[in-house]
Length: 91
Image (cartoon, rainbow, N blue to C red; front, side, top):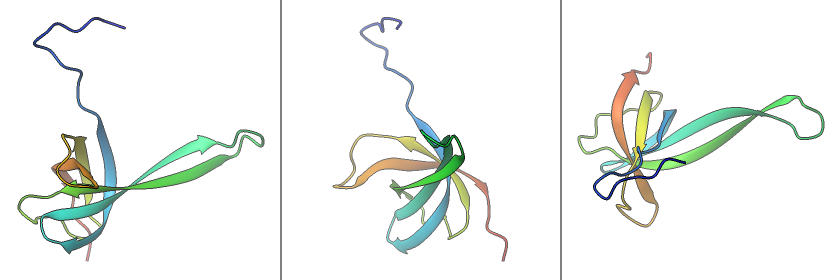
């Protein structure tokens, strides 16, 4: 792996997911799905992981597709921040 200089840091991890809860103030739960092959049967299995993300302006609603980015710990469970709302939920 490349050596990082003293004033550089690695790029922050980003994920795309769907907002499943916005019941909190300035926080949302984002479900990120991925598909991986089963280790024995090789059939693709969908795995979902939920991340709590910081939403400063409370602009996200349930069903919105968002991009979240890794950040410093903001609370006990919050280590992600909403960067972009990619698409709004259709109502």
